[in-house]
Length: 158
Image (tube, rainbow, N blue to C red):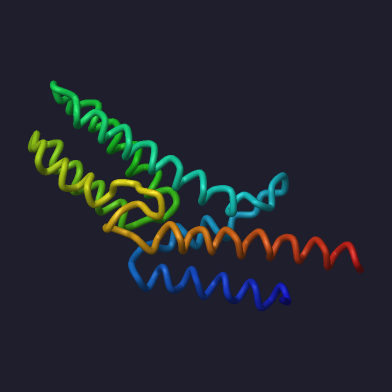
């Protein structure tokens, strides 16, 4: 597959994520970042983000299951999650964090349970809130790796 075709498919995939409301313009900005030391920056950013989200949601679930609820700890997790989502352009996750924050401010354990249920990580996705997001991000990451590899091979042959 030609690199122009791969790049177009990648841009179409990103556009589709934007149209679904899963990501915003910051996601496209992250894609456009070029790092001389690591052309795989964007492809590596996605799995790191997803791993961090799963870890924070797991930690929030553990905190929620404690006999004495520490709302300050939950608030810190919420800020971490929202910051990551904002930086990568995961706007639907950012909205979910606002709902989490409201439940924290209301000191509503039931509200937190409901929001975490929507976000809870499982084997295939990050929950009902944004099911297509992880698999779509994986596809974006794969396209990016193939595109970079294709360009390197093309450069080596010239």
